Image: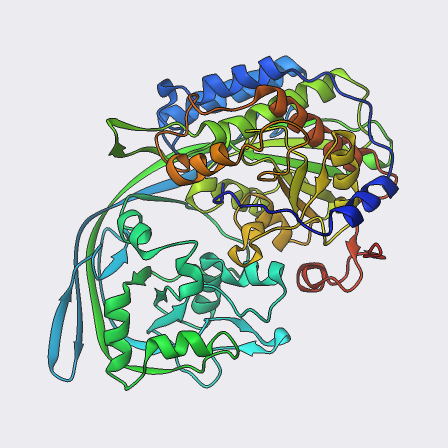
Length: 549
Protein backbone atom coordinates (compact mmCIF):
# COMPACT_ATOMS: atom_id res chain seq x y z
CA UNK A 1 0.00 0.00 0.00
CA UNK A 2 1.33 3.46 -0.79
CA UNK A 3 1.71 5.93 2.04
CA UNK A 4 -1.80 7.13 3.03
CA UNK A 5 -2.86 10.50 1.69
CA UNK A 6 -3.90 13.51 3.80
CA UNK A 7 -7.28 15.10 3.07
CA UNK A 8 -8.65 18.58 3.61
CA UNK A 9 -12.12 19.92 2.97
CA UNK A 10 -12.84 20.72 -0.65
CA UNK A 11 -15.13 23.16 -2.37
CA UNK A 12 -16.06 20.50 -4.91
CA UNK A 13 -18.04 18.38 -2.45
CA UNK A 14 -21.36 19.85 -3.52
CA UNK A 15 -20.70 19.06 -7.16
CA UNK A 16 -19.56 15.54 -6.34
CA UNK A 17 -22.71 14.95 -4.29
CA UNK A 18 -24.82 16.00 -7.25
CA UNK A 19 -22.92 13.59 -9.49
CA UNK A 20 -23.38 10.75 -7.01
CA UNK A 21 -27.11 11.42 -6.82
CA UNK A 22 -27.37 11.26 -10.59
CA UNK A 23 -25.69 7.85 -10.84
CA UNK A 24 -27.32 4.45 -11.16
CA UNK A 25 -29.34 2.94 -8.28
CA UNK A 26 -27.18 1.36 -5.61
CA UNK A 27 -27.35 -2.44 -5.12
CA UNK A 28 -29.27 -4.05 -2.26
CA UNK A 29 -27.52 -3.78 1.08
CA UNK A 30 -25.33 -6.88 1.52
CA UNK A 31 -25.13 -8.96 4.67
CA UNK A 32 -21.64 -7.97 5.72
CA UNK A 33 -20.26 -8.52 9.20
CA UNK A 34 -17.85 -6.35 11.17
CA UNK A 35 -16.93 -9.31 13.39
CA UNK A 36 -15.96 -11.42 10.34
CA UNK A 37 -13.77 -8.63 8.98
CA UNK A 38 -12.09 -8.28 12.38
CA UNK A 39 -11.59 -12.04 12.67
CA UNK A 40 -9.94 -12.33 9.25
CA UNK A 41 -7.72 -9.35 9.99
CA UNK A 42 -6.75 -10.72 13.38
CA UNK A 43 -5.60 -14.04 11.93
CA UNK A 44 -3.75 -12.59 8.94
CA UNK A 45 -1.95 -10.02 11.13
CA UNK A 46 -0.94 -12.53 13.80
CA UNK A 47 2.75 -12.97 14.68
CA UNK A 48 2.39 -16.60 13.57
CA UNK A 49 2.46 -15.40 9.95
CA UNK A 50 5.67 -13.40 10.48
CA UNK A 51 4.58 -10.46 8.35
CA UNK A 52 3.50 -12.55 5.31
CA UNK A 53 6.67 -11.92 3.34
CA UNK A 54 6.61 -12.96 -0.31
CA UNK A 55 8.01 -16.46 -0.73
CA UNK A 56 8.09 -17.09 3.02
CA UNK A 57 6.27 -19.66 5.17
CA UNK A 58 4.03 -17.03 6.75
CA UNK A 59 2.72 -15.97 3.36
CA UNK A 60 2.00 -19.59 2.47
CA UNK A 61 -0.09 -19.96 5.64
CA UNK A 62 -2.01 -16.81 4.69
CA UNK A 63 -2.56 -18.12 1.16
CA UNK A 64 -3.92 -21.43 2.48
CA UNK A 65 -6.27 -19.48 4.77
CA UNK A 66 -7.61 -17.36 1.91
CA UNK A 67 -8.14 -20.41 -0.30
CA UNK A 68 -10.08 -22.09 2.52
CA UNK A 69 -12.26 -19.01 2.90
CA UNK A 70 -12.95 -18.97 -0.84
CA UNK A 71 -13.99 -22.61 -0.70
CA UNK A 72 -16.20 -22.03 2.33
CA UNK A 73 -17.92 -19.14 0.54
CA UNK A 74 -18.57 -21.29 -2.51
CA UNK A 75 -16.19 -19.55 -4.91
CA UNK A 76 -14.83 -21.71 -7.70
CA UNK A 77 -11.06 -22.26 -8.08
CA UNK A 78 -9.52 -19.73 -10.43
CA UNK A 79 -6.68 -21.77 -11.94
CA UNK A 80 -8.07 -25.05 -13.23
CA UNK A 81 -9.04 -27.02 -10.14
CA UNK A 82 -6.76 -24.94 -7.90
CA UNK A 83 -7.09 -21.59 -6.15
CA UNK A 84 -3.34 -20.98 -6.53
CA UNK A 85 -1.49 -19.30 -9.38
CA UNK A 86 2.13 -19.96 -8.42
CA UNK A 87 4.93 -17.67 -9.54
CA UNK A 88 8.62 -18.24 -9.11
CA UNK A 89 10.30 -15.54 -7.08
CA UNK A 90 13.92 -14.84 -6.28
CA UNK A 91 14.98 -13.36 -2.97
CA UNK A 92 18.27 -11.55 -3.45
CA UNK A 93 20.49 -10.52 -0.56
CA UNK A 94 23.48 -8.24 -0.86
CA UNK A 95 26.56 -9.82 0.69
CA UNK A 96 29.27 -7.32 -0.23
CA UNK A 97 29.85 -4.22 -2.37
CA UNK A 98 32.77 -2.19 -3.65
CA UNK A 99 31.68 1.02 -5.35
CA UNK A 100 33.97 3.77 -6.58
CA UNK A 101 33.90 6.86 -8.79
CA UNK A 102 36.93 7.97 -10.80
CA UNK A 103 37.49 11.15 -12.81
CA UNK A 104 40.57 13.09 -13.90
CA UNK A 105 42.94 10.55 -12.44
CA UNK A 106 41.31 10.66 -8.99
CA UNK A 107 39.25 7.87 -7.48
CA UNK A 108 36.98 7.94 -4.44
CA UNK A 109 35.33 5.03 -2.63
CA UNK A 110 31.57 5.25 -2.19
CA UNK A 111 29.93 3.63 0.82
CA UNK A 112 26.66 1.82 0.20
CA UNK A 113 23.99 3.25 2.48
CA UNK A 114 25.94 6.48 2.99
CA UNK A 115 26.94 7.92 -0.40
CA UNK A 116 24.73 5.76 -2.58
CA UNK A 117 22.07 3.08 -2.10
CA UNK A 118 22.34 -0.15 -4.07
CA UNK A 119 20.53 -3.46 -3.70
CA UNK A 120 21.51 -6.99 -4.68
CA UNK A 121 21.76 -8.08 -8.29
CA UNK A 122 18.64 -9.73 -9.77
CA UNK A 123 20.69 -11.64 -12.33
CA UNK A 124 24.15 -12.62 -11.04
CA UNK A 125 25.66 -13.74 -7.77
CA UNK A 126 28.94 -12.01 -8.63
CA UNK A 127 29.06 -8.98 -10.86
CA UNK A 128 31.38 -6.14 -11.84
CA UNK A 129 30.31 -3.12 -13.87
CA UNK A 130 32.52 -0.25 -15.04
CA UNK A 131 30.35 2.41 -16.60
CA UNK A 132 30.44 5.76 -18.32
CA UNK A 133 27.62 8.02 -17.11
CA UNK A 134 25.07 10.09 -19.01
CA UNK A 135 22.50 12.47 -17.48
CA UNK A 136 19.10 11.96 -19.15
CA UNK A 137 16.89 14.45 -17.26
CA UNK A 138 13.67 12.76 -16.20
CA UNK A 139 14.62 9.66 -18.19
CA UNK A 140 11.30 9.63 -20.07
CA UNK A 141 10.98 8.27 -23.60
CA UNK A 142 7.49 9.29 -24.74
CA UNK A 143 7.65 11.10 -28.11
CA UNK A 144 3.86 10.98 -28.38
CA UNK A 145 3.79 13.39 -25.43
CA UNK A 146 6.60 15.54 -26.76
CA UNK A 147 9.05 14.01 -24.25
CA UNK A 148 12.25 12.34 -25.42
CA UNK A 149 14.94 12.77 -22.80
CA UNK A 150 17.22 10.36 -24.68
CA UNK A 151 17.25 12.40 -27.90
CA UNK A 152 20.81 12.80 -29.22
CA UNK A 153 22.33 10.75 -26.38
CA UNK A 154 24.16 7.43 -26.72
CA UNK A 155 23.50 5.41 -23.56
CA UNK A 156 24.24 1.91 -24.82
CA UNK A 157 26.16 -0.01 -22.20
CA UNK A 158 26.29 3.03 -19.93
CA UNK A 159 24.76 4.16 -16.66
CA UNK A 160 21.95 6.67 -17.07
CA UNK A 161 21.56 9.25 -14.32
CA UNK A 162 17.96 10.43 -14.05
CA UNK A 163 15.69 12.36 -11.71
CA UNK A 164 12.92 10.61 -9.83
CA UNK A 165 9.44 11.83 -10.70
CA UNK A 166 8.08 13.37 -13.90
CA UNK A 167 7.32 16.85 -15.30
CA UNK A 168 4.56 18.83 -13.63
CA UNK A 169 3.16 19.57 -17.09
CA UNK A 170 1.85 16.00 -17.38
CA UNK A 171 -1.67 15.14 -16.32
CA UNK A 172 -1.48 13.72 -12.76
CA UNK A 173 -2.30 10.15 -13.79
CA UNK A 174 0.29 10.14 -16.59
CA UNK A 175 2.75 11.75 -14.22
CA UNK A 176 2.22 8.81 -11.88
CA UNK A 177 2.90 6.37 -14.71
CA UNK A 178 6.10 8.00 -15.88
CA UNK A 179 7.34 8.53 -12.31
CA UNK A 180 7.26 4.81 -11.54
CA UNK A 181 10.85 3.55 -11.37
CA UNK A 182 10.02 0.27 -13.09
CA UNK A 183 8.67 2.22 -16.07
CA UNK A 184 11.86 4.28 -16.18
CA UNK A 185 13.90 1.08 -16.04
CA UNK A 186 11.96 -0.28 -19.03
CA UNK A 187 12.62 2.88 -21.04
CA UNK A 188 16.32 2.89 -20.13
CA UNK A 189 16.69 -0.79 -21.00
CA UNK A 190 15.00 -0.24 -24.37
CA UNK A 191 17.70 2.35 -25.12
CA UNK A 192 20.43 -0.14 -24.16
CA UNK A 193 21.42 1.29 -20.76
CA UNK A 194 23.28 -1.04 -18.43
CA UNK A 195 22.30 0.68 -15.16
CA UNK A 196 19.96 3.34 -13.79
CA UNK A 197 21.20 5.84 -11.19
CA UNK A 198 18.45 7.97 -9.67
CA UNK A 199 18.51 11.46 -8.19
CA UNK A 200 16.10 12.67 -5.56
CA UNK A 201 14.79 16.05 -6.67
CA UNK A 202 13.17 18.04 -3.85
CA UNK A 203 9.64 17.20 -5.02
CA UNK A 204 10.32 13.47 -4.60
CA UNK A 205 12.24 13.91 -1.35
CA UNK A 206 8.92 14.81 0.32
CA UNK A 207 7.44 11.40 -0.43
CA UNK A 208 10.49 9.15 -0.67
CA UNK A 209 13.30 10.71 1.40
CA UNK A 210 16.94 9.81 0.94
CA UNK A 211 17.25 8.91 4.62
CA UNK A 212 14.68 6.13 4.14
CA UNK A 213 16.07 5.00 0.78
CA UNK A 214 19.64 4.64 2.01
CA UNK A 215 18.46 2.27 4.75
CA UNK A 216 15.93 0.18 2.87
CA UNK A 217 17.32 -0.17 -0.67
CA UNK A 218 20.33 -2.29 0.39
CA UNK A 219 18.05 -4.72 2.27
CA UNK A 220 16.99 -8.04 0.70
CA UNK A 221 14.63 -7.68 -2.27
CA UNK A 222 12.34 -10.01 -4.21
CA UNK A 223 11.42 -10.25 -7.89
CA UNK A 224 9.58 -12.78 -10.03
CA UNK A 225 11.55 -14.83 -12.51
CA UNK A 226 10.49 -16.62 -15.66
CA UNK A 227 9.37 -15.89 -19.19
CA UNK A 228 8.28 -12.32 -19.86
CA UNK A 229 5.93 -10.84 -22.41
CA UNK A 230 7.01 -11.31 -26.03
CA UNK A 231 9.47 -8.58 -26.93
CA UNK A 232 9.78 -7.27 -23.38
CA UNK A 233 13.26 -6.03 -22.52
CA UNK A 234 14.61 -7.07 -19.13
CA UNK A 235 15.35 -4.23 -16.68
CA UNK A 236 18.95 -3.01 -16.45
CA UNK A 237 21.35 -4.99 -14.32
CA UNK A 238 21.54 -2.37 -11.55
CA UNK A 239 19.42 0.44 -10.14
CA UNK A 240 21.14 2.69 -7.62
CA UNK A 241 20.09 5.89 -5.82
CA UNK A 242 22.67 8.66 -5.47
CA UNK A 243 22.93 10.50 -2.17
CA UNK A 244 22.65 14.29 -2.32
CA UNK A 245 26.31 14.98 -1.47
CA UNK A 246 27.68 12.64 -4.13
CA UNK A 247 25.12 13.93 -6.69
CA UNK A 248 26.38 17.49 -6.18
CA UNK A 249 29.96 16.33 -6.57
CA UNK A 250 29.20 14.35 -9.72
CA UNK A 251 27.59 17.30 -11.48
CA UNK A 252 30.15 19.83 -10.30
CA UNK A 253 32.81 17.85 -12.20
CA UNK A 254 31.22 19.09 -15.46
CA UNK A 255 30.47 22.60 -14.17
CA UNK A 256 26.79 21.94 -13.46
CA UNK A 257 24.79 22.91 -10.38
CA UNK A 258 22.40 20.05 -9.64
CA UNK A 259 20.22 22.27 -7.45
CA UNK A 260 19.81 24.72 -10.34
CA UNK A 261 18.84 21.80 -12.62
CA UNK A 262 16.20 20.73 -10.11
CA UNK A 263 14.75 24.26 -10.00
CA UNK A 264 14.73 24.65 -13.78
CA UNK A 265 12.98 21.27 -14.17
CA UNK A 266 9.87 22.79 -12.60
CA UNK A 267 9.21 24.74 -15.79
CA UNK A 268 11.05 22.92 -18.61
CA UNK A 269 12.48 19.41 -19.09
CA UNK A 270 16.25 19.48 -18.43
CA UNK A 271 18.49 18.60 -21.36
CA UNK A 272 20.78 15.62 -20.99
CA UNK A 273 24.55 15.53 -21.34
CA UNK A 274 27.49 13.16 -20.73
CA UNK A 275 28.95 13.23 -17.23
CA UNK A 276 32.63 13.10 -16.43
CA UNK A 277 34.29 10.02 -15.03
CA UNK A 278 33.21 6.43 -14.51
CA UNK A 279 31.51 4.50 -11.77
CA UNK A 280 32.61 1.00 -10.84
CA UNK A 281 30.28 -1.44 -9.08
CA UNK A 282 31.40 -4.81 -7.77
CA UNK A 283 28.91 -6.79 -5.71
CA UNK A 284 28.26 -10.28 -4.44
CA UNK A 285 24.66 -11.38 -4.02
CA UNK A 286 22.97 -14.44 -2.60
CA UNK A 287 19.98 -15.82 -4.50
CA UNK A 288 17.26 -17.96 -2.97
CA UNK A 289 14.45 -19.08 -5.25
CA UNK A 290 10.97 -19.94 -4.03
CA UNK A 291 7.35 -20.13 -5.16
CA UNK A 292 4.68 -17.72 -4.00
CA UNK A 293 1.09 -17.80 -5.29
CA UNK A 294 -1.66 -15.43 -6.18
CA UNK A 295 -4.87 -16.86 -4.70
CA UNK A 296 -7.82 -16.65 -7.11
CA UNK A 297 -11.49 -17.38 -6.45
CA UNK A 298 -14.22 -17.08 -9.07
CA UNK A 299 -17.86 -16.05 -8.66
CA UNK A 300 -19.44 -16.99 -12.01
CA UNK A 301 -21.72 -14.53 -13.75
CA UNK A 302 -25.32 -15.43 -14.52
CA UNK A 303 -26.01 -13.51 -17.74
CA UNK A 304 -25.51 -15.69 -20.85
CA UNK A 305 -23.60 -12.91 -22.63
CA UNK A 306 -22.04 -10.88 -19.82
CA UNK A 307 -20.68 -13.86 -17.87
CA UNK A 308 -17.71 -13.93 -20.24
CA UNK A 309 -16.71 -10.45 -19.09
CA UNK A 310 -14.86 -10.10 -15.79
CA UNK A 311 -14.55 -7.72 -12.86
CA UNK A 312 -11.23 -8.17 -11.06
CA UNK A 313 -10.98 -7.43 -7.32
CA UNK A 314 -7.37 -7.41 -6.12
CA UNK A 315 -6.13 -7.18 -2.53
CA UNK A 316 -2.48 -7.85 -1.77
CA UNK A 317 -1.92 -10.56 0.78
CA UNK A 318 1.77 -9.90 1.41
CA UNK A 319 3.42 -7.45 3.74
CA UNK A 320 7.12 -6.81 4.41
CA UNK A 321 7.85 -9.76 6.69
CA UNK A 322 10.54 -9.62 9.36
CA UNK A 323 12.68 -6.49 9.32
CA UNK A 324 14.82 -4.15 11.40
CA UNK A 325 13.91 -4.20 15.08
CA UNK A 326 11.80 -1.32 16.37
CA UNK A 327 11.04 -1.13 20.11
CA UNK A 328 11.87 -4.81 20.54
CA UNK A 329 9.64 -6.00 17.66
CA UNK A 330 10.84 -7.33 14.29
CA UNK A 331 7.55 -8.67 12.88
CA UNK A 332 5.87 -6.25 10.46
CA UNK A 333 2.32 -7.56 10.82
CA UNK A 334 0.61 -5.33 8.27
CA UNK A 335 -2.82 -5.24 9.93
CA UNK A 336 -4.07 -2.24 7.99
CA UNK A 337 -1.69 -2.84 5.08
CA UNK A 338 -3.13 -5.18 3.98
CA UNK A 339 -4.61 -7.87 6.23
CA UNK A 340 -7.60 -5.55 6.65
CA UNK A 341 -8.02 -5.08 2.91
CA UNK A 342 -7.96 -8.83 2.32
CA UNK A 343 -10.44 -9.28 5.18
CA UNK A 344 -12.85 -6.85 3.52
CA UNK A 345 -12.46 -8.65 0.19
CA UNK A 346 -13.15 -12.02 1.82
CA UNK A 347 -16.32 -10.85 3.52
CA UNK A 348 -17.57 -9.14 0.36
CA UNK A 349 -16.88 -12.34 -1.59
CA UNK A 350 -18.84 -14.35 0.96
CA UNK A 351 -21.77 -11.93 0.88
CA UNK A 352 -21.87 -11.83 -2.92
CA UNK A 353 -21.70 -15.62 -3.19
CA UNK A 354 -24.62 -15.90 -0.76
CA UNK A 355 -26.76 -13.40 -2.69
CA UNK A 356 -28.12 -13.14 -6.21
CA UNK A 357 -25.38 -14.02 -8.72
CA UNK A 358 -23.81 -11.10 -10.57
CA UNK A 359 -24.28 -10.71 -14.30
CA UNK A 360 -20.55 -10.57 -15.03
CA UNK A 361 -18.06 -12.99 -13.52
CA UNK A 362 -16.06 -11.64 -10.57
CA UNK A 363 -12.45 -12.69 -9.95
CA UNK A 364 -11.21 -12.22 -6.39
CA UNK A 365 -7.39 -12.18 -6.39
CA UNK A 366 -5.27 -12.09 -3.23
CA UNK A 367 -1.95 -11.10 -4.77
CA UNK A 368 1.59 -11.81 -3.72
CA UNK A 369 4.55 -9.44 -3.87
CA UNK A 370 2.73 -6.09 -4.04
CA UNK A 371 5.17 -4.63 -1.53
CA UNK A 372 8.07 -5.89 -3.66
CA UNK A 373 6.99 -4.01 -6.80
CA UNK A 374 3.48 -5.25 -7.72
CA UNK A 375 4.89 -8.68 -8.55
CA UNK A 376 1.69 -10.71 -8.29
CA UNK A 377 -0.49 -8.36 -10.31
CA UNK A 378 2.25 -7.87 -12.91
CA UNK A 379 2.57 -11.64 -13.20
CA UNK A 380 -1.21 -11.99 -13.53
CA UNK A 381 -1.44 -9.64 -16.51
CA UNK A 382 1.51 -11.49 -18.07
CA UNK A 383 -0.16 -14.87 -17.53
CA UNK A 384 -3.87 -14.03 -17.18
CA UNK A 385 -6.36 -16.77 -16.38
CA UNK A 386 -8.95 -15.03 -18.60
CA UNK A 387 -8.44 -12.92 -21.74
CA UNK A 388 -7.26 -9.45 -20.73
CA UNK A 389 -9.56 -7.82 -23.28
CA UNK A 390 -12.51 -9.41 -21.44
CA UNK A 391 -11.64 -7.75 -18.11
CA UNK A 392 -14.15 -4.92 -17.74
CA UNK A 393 -12.74 -3.33 -14.57
CA UNK A 394 -10.08 -3.81 -11.90
CA UNK A 395 -10.63 -2.63 -8.31
CA UNK A 396 -7.84 -2.56 -5.73
CA UNK A 397 -8.70 -3.06 -2.04
CA UNK A 398 -5.52 -1.90 -0.35
CA UNK A 399 -5.63 -0.65 3.23
CA UNK A 400 -8.25 -0.37 5.97
CA UNK A 401 -8.06 3.27 7.03
CA UNK A 402 -11.24 3.18 9.11
CA UNK A 403 -10.30 5.29 12.12
CA UNK A 404 -13.51 7.36 12.18
CA UNK A 405 -17.02 7.72 10.75
CA UNK A 406 -15.67 8.86 7.39
CA UNK A 407 -17.76 10.96 5.03
CA UNK A 408 -15.30 11.18 2.13
CA UNK A 409 -13.67 8.68 -0.20
CA UNK A 410 -10.57 9.30 -2.31
CA UNK A 411 -11.35 7.15 -5.35
CA UNK A 412 -8.23 7.21 -7.52
CA UNK A 413 -9.09 6.44 -11.12
CA UNK A 414 -12.69 7.63 -10.77
CA UNK A 415 -12.11 10.69 -12.97
CA UNK A 416 -11.11 8.61 -15.98
CA UNK A 417 -13.98 6.21 -16.68
CA UNK A 418 -17.62 5.46 -15.91
CA UNK A 419 -16.35 3.25 -13.12
CA UNK A 420 -16.17 6.55 -11.23
CA UNK A 421 -19.94 7.00 -11.53
CA UNK A 422 -20.45 3.51 -10.13
CA UNK A 423 -18.12 4.38 -7.25
CA UNK A 424 -19.96 7.64 -6.55
CA UNK A 425 -23.26 5.76 -6.31
CA UNK A 426 -21.73 3.19 -3.94
CA UNK A 427 -20.31 6.02 -1.81
CA UNK A 428 -23.70 7.73 -1.67
CA UNK A 429 -25.28 4.47 -0.48
CA UNK A 430 -23.10 4.56 2.67
CA UNK A 431 -23.48 8.30 3.23
CA UNK A 432 -20.13 9.36 1.72
CA UNK A 433 -18.95 11.35 -1.29
CA UNK A 434 -15.89 11.42 -3.51
CA UNK A 435 -13.23 13.95 -2.59
CA UNK A 436 -10.18 14.78 -4.73
CA UNK A 437 -6.70 13.36 -4.26
CA UNK A 438 -4.93 15.96 -2.11
CA UNK A 439 -1.41 14.97 -3.25
CA UNK A 440 -1.65 13.98 -6.92
CA UNK A 441 2.08 14.62 -7.33
CA UNK A 442 2.85 11.47 -5.38
CA UNK A 443 1.34 9.23 -8.07
CA UNK A 444 -0.61 6.78 -5.91
CA UNK A 445 -2.54 5.48 -8.92
CA UNK A 446 0.66 3.68 -9.97
CA UNK A 447 1.39 2.29 -6.50
CA UNK A 448 -0.97 -0.63 -6.01
CA UNK A 449 -2.28 -3.69 -7.80
CA UNK A 450 -4.62 -1.86 -10.15
CA UNK A 451 -1.67 -0.36 -12.02
CA UNK A 452 -0.61 -3.35 -14.18
CA UNK A 453 -4.25 -3.64 -15.30
CA UNK A 454 -4.31 0.06 -16.12
CA UNK A 455 -1.22 -0.33 -18.31
CA UNK A 456 -3.21 -2.89 -20.31
CA UNK A 457 -6.12 -0.53 -20.89
CA UNK A 458 -8.50 -1.73 -18.15
CA UNK A 459 -10.55 0.93 -16.32
CA UNK A 460 -9.39 0.85 -12.69
CA UNK A 461 -10.31 2.14 -9.26
CA UNK A 462 -8.12 2.47 -6.16
CA UNK A 463 -10.28 3.88 -3.33
CA UNK A 464 -9.65 4.62 0.33
CA UNK A 465 -11.52 6.49 3.08
CA UNK A 466 -10.55 10.15 3.32
CA UNK A 467 -8.73 11.66 6.25
CA UNK A 468 -11.04 13.81 8.37
CA UNK A 469 -14.44 14.85 6.96
CA UNK A 470 -16.47 12.91 9.53
CA UNK A 471 -20.20 12.30 9.14
CA UNK A 472 -20.46 12.56 12.90
CA UNK A 473 -18.27 12.29 15.99
CA UNK A 474 -14.46 12.57 16.13
CA UNK A 475 -12.56 13.34 12.95
CA UNK A 476 -9.96 10.58 13.46
CA UNK A 477 -7.14 12.86 12.35
CA UNK A 478 -4.90 12.09 15.34
CA UNK A 479 -5.32 8.35 14.77
CA UNK A 480 -4.74 8.70 11.04
CA UNK A 481 -1.61 10.81 11.51
CA UNK A 482 -0.36 8.43 14.18
CA UNK A 483 -0.61 5.57 11.72
CA UNK A 484 1.15 7.53 8.97
CA UNK A 485 3.97 8.69 11.19
CA UNK A 486 4.67 5.67 13.38
CA UNK A 487 2.96 2.52 12.05
CA UNK A 488 3.03 2.55 8.24
CA UNK A 489 5.45 -0.20 7.17
CA UNK A 490 6.50 -0.63 10.78
CA UNK A 491 6.01 -3.44 13.32
CA UNK A 492 3.34 -1.30 15.01
CA UNK A 493 0.92 -1.82 12.10
CA UNK A 494 -0.83 -4.43 14.22
CA UNK A 495 -4.10 -5.15 16.00
CA UNK A 496 -3.39 -2.56 18.70
CA UNK A 497 -4.31 0.21 16.25
CA UNK A 498 -7.68 1.93 16.88
CA UNK A 499 -9.50 0.41 13.90
CA UNK A 500 -13.25 1.13 13.94
CA UNK A 501 -14.79 -2.20 12.95
CA UNK A 502 -18.24 -0.68 12.46
CA UNK A 503 -16.64 1.61 9.90
CA UNK A 504 -14.79 -1.35 8.36
CA UNK A 505 -18.22 -2.85 7.74
CA UNK A 506 -19.36 0.41 6.10
CA UNK A 507 -16.23 0.31 3.94
CA UNK A 508 -17.06 -3.26 2.93
CA UNK A 509 -20.55 -2.11 1.92
CA UNK A 510 -18.98 0.50 -0.34
CA UNK A 511 -16.59 -2.05 -1.88
CA UNK A 512 -19.52 -4.41 -2.40
CA UNK A 513 -21.44 -1.61 -4.10
CA UNK A 514 -18.62 -0.86 -6.52
CA UNK A 515 -18.12 -4.52 -7.45
CA UNK A 516 -21.83 -5.20 -7.84
CA UNK A 517 -22.32 -2.00 -9.81
CA UNK A 518 -19.56 -2.91 -12.26
CA UNK A 519 -20.67 -6.55 -12.49
CA UNK A 520 -24.34 -5.78 -13.07
CA UNK A 521 -24.23 -2.69 -15.30
CA UNK A 522 -25.77 -3.21 -18.73
CA UNK A 523 -22.66 -1.67 -20.32
CA UNK A 524 -19.13 -2.42 -19.21
CA UNK A 525 -17.22 0.54 -17.72
CA UNK A 526 -15.97 2.84 -20.48
CA UNK A 527 -13.13 5.35 -20.66
CA UNK A 528 -14.12 8.99 -20.97
CA UNK A 529 -13.57 10.68 -24.31
CA UNK A 530 -10.42 12.80 -24.30
CA UNK A 531 -9.02 11.20 -21.16
CA UNK A 532 -5.18 11.14 -21.14
CA UNK A 533 -4.98 7.66 -19.62
CA UNK A 534 -7.39 6.32 -22.22
CA UNK A 535 -5.32 7.85 -25.00
CA UNK A 536 -2.13 6.35 -23.56
CA UNK A 537 -3.30 2.85 -22.65
CA UNK A 538 -6.59 2.17 -24.45
CA UNK A 539 -6.50 4.16 -27.69
CA UNK A 540 -9.03 1.93 -29.46
CA UNK A 541 -11.44 1.24 -26.60
CA UNK A 542 -15.01 2.54 -26.55
CA UNK A 543 -15.52 5.99 -25.06
CA UNK A 544 -18.21 7.57 -22.93
CA UNK A 545 -19.09 11.23 -22.60
CA UNK A 546 -17.54 12.62 -19.40
CA UNK A 547 -19.97 14.00 -16.83
CA UNK A 548 -20.47 17.73 -16.55
CA UNK A 549 -18.20 19.39 -13.96
